[in-house]
Length: 103
Image 1: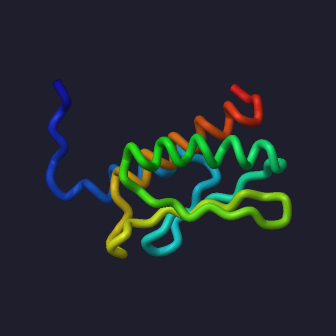
Image 2: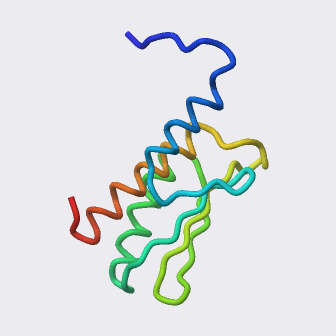
C-alpha cells in the first residue's frame, strides 16, 4: 500500500525526484540532458530510450551533436513536467549507465 501524498506537494515531489537525477536540468516545461557517448553507444541508448518512452507514451527529442547525445523531455501539450517525464529521465540514466558500462 502506498502512502498518501498531502495535497499541494506535487511540484515539490517532482522537484525532489529530479534533484536525485544528476545532470538533468529543467528549462521551463522541459527536462534536458547532454550525455557523452560514441556513435554505437548513442544507437544503443536511443533504442533503449524508445522502448521506455513507448511504455510511458512520451516522445523524447533525441539528437546527436558534437560527440554528445542531447535529450529533451517535455509534455506534448506544453504543460508542466509530469511524473512520467521524471520517470523516463530516471530510466534514461539507468540505460546510459548500462550502455557505457558503468554500474
